[in-house]
Image 1 (cartoon, rainbow, N blue to C red):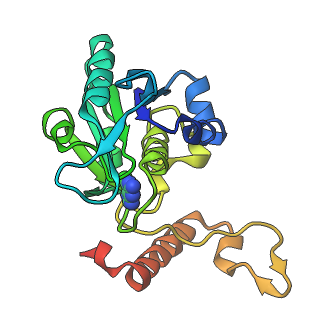
Image 2 (image 1 turned 60 degrees about the vertical axis):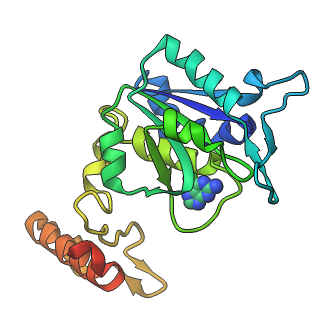
Length: 224
Ligand code: 6GU
């Protein structure tokens, strides 16, 4: 899969993909992330990409021309399956959306800034609008990083048996069960006996019960 990201803050998107699973996904050639500086398509030599909003009001708006030019130039090289605008008024991200997006070949993400982007870009180019939750971030970059990570880890071959996504929280609408490692007795706090007796069938039953219990206590809405 290839993901292109349009942003006015490319520096913010360097580190998130240079470590751990995202790094491995790229090294294995399963994921390509290309970050593009929107200023490359600025309307003048000063690098302008935003302007005052019509109708008045505080805050700048990202101009349509740089975004349209960038989208069109990138689209000449490949057909995007989705052009996603990261925005707090988009559809709230969940595991199902990430699962669906992980099946695509080419995705273009647009990070908004200031008051947002000229609505004509949303109407004529954007195919999907995604938020990562009901709170406001300064820009779409961190949200794009979250989205890339949640998609990238689902690509076949990225995770191994140990890190398998099959047992993640949310993959079956259940939260993950509690986990323990050495030592067996830490400050008098003991690991549950059932995990120590080697009966794998019993352990799986226990984990499933714990998942159900956690989900009903913490996120009852997931069980509906
Ligand atoms: Cl995608 N962008 C911004 N600016 N804030 C957000 C968001 C996105 N998702 C939640 N808050």
